[in-house]
Length: 583
Ligand code: NAD
Picture (cartoon, helix red, strand yellow):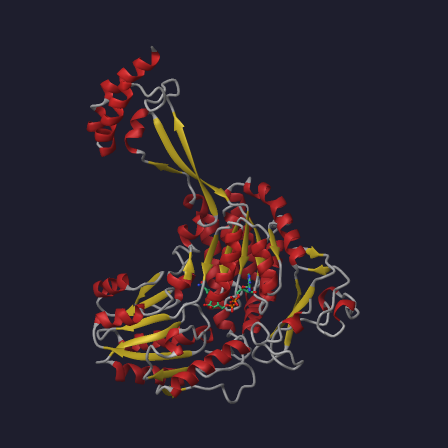
C-alpha cells in the first residue's frame, strides 16, 4: 500500500519537499550497505517514494531480508540536512525479530544477575568511550545542544546502567511473606520474580537515547529479551544502542531493533510480546492499549503531561525563576515533564516575572553544532505548529507575550523563541493541552487551596513542583497534587534518578519505569507456598462432618482475628478433627 497516497499529511509534519526538514519514505537506497538503487515498484508506480528494497538491509543487531521493507530518513531539524537512513520494518520483519528474541531469551534468563550485569557494564564502558560521538548524534537527530544530550540523556543512562547492573539481584531477591496464623500450621510463602520473556519497547523522539536505553537495560537485567521500535524521527540513535550492545557481546537476538513508523509500532503491539513498554502521546497510547487489550498483553503507558509549577510567596525567587526557565525551555520544551504551567503567588508575581523574562532573554539559541548554546531547535514541524496555535489562541483571548512568541527570525531550521506569556487562564489551549515547546505561561493565585485546585485542573498528572522555603508546607502541598511525581524546590529531573519510580496518573498513563517499581513491571511474580507437614491433612478438607461445621464456626470467630493466642485456643478442636478423620 502506498504510504504517501494513504497519509498525505506526514505523521510528524516533516515535509516531503526534497529540501525540507523532516522525515519521509526514501527512494530505496541504503548507502551504508552499498545496496543498489532499486527499480520503481510495479505495485505503486505512481509513487516515487514507495520502492521495495531488493537486497538485505544491514541493521546493527540483525539483517532483515524483506521484499516489503522501506527506508526512513533521519534529518537534522536545525539545518534540514540528511543524517542517515534506516529500514522501515514491516509486520513480517517485526514477527521475525520477535521469533529471534524468543529463541535467545531462555539461555539469557539462565545466566546469573552478575553475568548479565557484566554485559551491561561492558556496554556502559563503550558508551563512555564514545561519549562525544553519541552526544553529537543525539544532538543532530533532535536539535538539542550537545551539552544537553550529554547532561539529560547520556549521564542518566550511565548512572542507570551502573545501578541496575549492580542492584537488580538485590531488588529482585525472593521475598518471604508473613502468612500470619497459617505459619503455625507449618506453612511458608515466598514470592520469586521470573523474567517475562520478550518485552516490546516503543519509544518517542524527544529522548531518543535515554528513554529506550533505560528500558532496554532494565529489561535485560530482569532476564528478558527486547524488541525495540524507536521513533521514526530518531532511528539512528536507537541503532547506535544496538551497535553498542553488539560490541559489548550481548548474545544475538536479545536486542532486536525494528526501525519504522507507526505501522511498525502497531505491528509490534499485535505480535504477541509479553509486555509493551510504550512512551509517547496520549492519542497513540490509547491505540496501543486497545491493541494490547485484544491480546491481553500487559502494558506500561508513559504518556504526555501538562506539568504545573507552584511558586509560594516564601520561595527563593532567583532560584525559582531559574528553575522555571530551565524546566520550561530545556530540550526546547519538549520533555514530557516540562514545566508547562507556572502558578505564582500574587504578592511576588511582578518580581518573579521580571526575573523570568530577564533570564529568558539571556538564553542563547542556535544550531546544536555551535558551542555555548542553551536552547536548540525543536524536533519537528508538527510540534512547532502546535506551539504557534497555542500562542495564537491564547493571544486572541487576551494573553500577553512578554518575550518570544514567534519562530526564531535569524535561524532557518525548526527554531521557536523561548516564550514567556502572562494573563493566561484555563479556558486556553495553552493551559489545557500539551504544548511541548519552549513556552512558559504564568498565572497568579491567592491561596494555597487555589494553587492546588489550579494544578489539579488538568487531564494530565505526570510531574509537578512546589517552590517554598518551608519544607513541611512544601510536602503537605505536594501530597495534595495529582501527579506521579511531585518535587519540592526541583523541576523535571527525577527521570534521571534511576532509583526512583517514573510514571503518571490520569491521562499521563499507568505503570512505572525506573526504580524497584519499574523493575517489577518487567518480571512475573510467582508465589511459592510450601506445606512442611504434608502427612497431616488440612482441617478444611472433606468430610464436612458435624464436628467440622463446629470447628469452622470457631475458626471464623478466632482464627481470622490474626491473634496467635485466639488461634491457639482452637488447638484441642483441631486435634479432635484430625482424630475424627482418622476413624
Ligand atoms: P507518538 O505517540 O507520536 O509516538 C511514539 C511512538 O509510537 C513512536 O515510536 C511511533 O512510531 C509509535 N507509534 C505511532 N503510532 C503507533 C501505533 N498505532 N501503535 C504503536 N506504536 C505507534 O509520540 P511522539 O510524538 O513520538 O512523542 C511525544 C509524546 O511522548 C509527548 O506527548 C510526550 O509527553 C510523550 N512522552 C512521555 C514520556 C513519559 O515518560 N511519560 C517521555 C517522553 C515522551
